[in-house]
Amino acid sequence: MEPVLSLSRLAVALCACLLAGCAALSTTGRKVELVRSAPYGAKFVGTVAGSAPLAGWAFKNVSYEAAVNSALNQAGRLGATHLVLDPDSGPRFWGVGQSARGKAYRADRRATAATRSGGNRTAYLE
Image 1 (cartoon, one colour):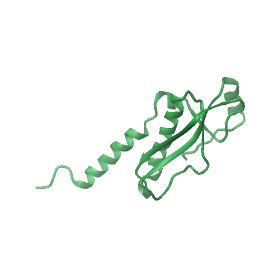
Image 2 (cartoon, one colour):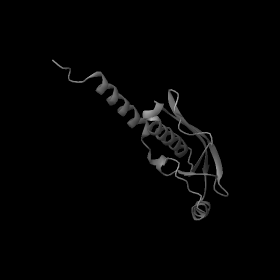
Image 3 (cartoon, rainbow, N blue to C red):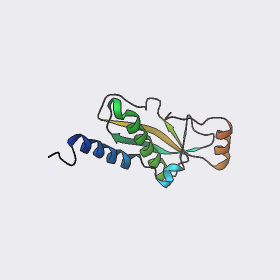
Image 4 (tube, rainbow, N blue to C red):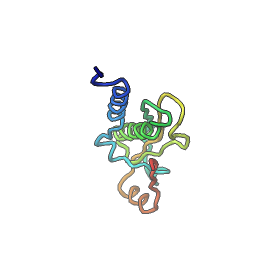
């Protein structure tokens, strides 16, 4: 008789559950925008670091996205409106997990509008 749940299916299910919990953006994290540089006049509110388990070829992008989401959630808890990721923060092939570090800033509406009109937005996770 074949087992109901094979070991490989259990491993895939466990990985999916771990990543689903790590990748969730909070309400405050959704309000934080990833940018290349701090908006003009923005106030530095803190440094954040997000991490997520798993790496390697199969999981590096999903795990890195979860790490960025974790950093966005932290920035949101600090009251930030923008997050500038460190230049060396990016998906890694080797290792036991992914991490994303950056600096969180809070900008008023004028600074935010100036940043958006200047084309300073970046899609980091493409």
